Image (cartoon, rainbow, N blue to C red; front, top):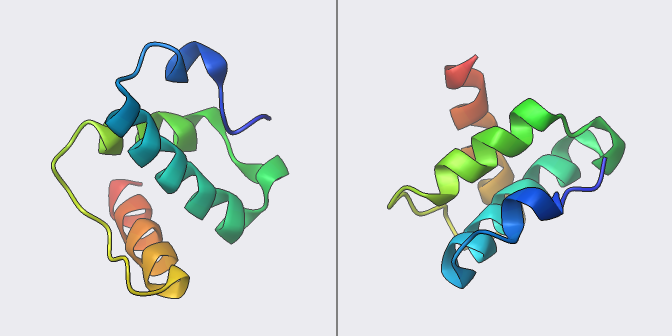
Length: 74
């Protein structure tokens, strides 16, 4: 699955699209690009519409942040 999912990203504002790609890239790092599901991408889309901010100090913390959000969602 292509993590850019054009049908979702074409309609997004640039800053929302950036947040979406940021979140989706974390899922791709954690699970591998071929294991990113449409449910994960929907989660990224929903997260990108919030005012939430992920940590920016290192990718390990970014991935931990999204993994914890994802695990609490499931």
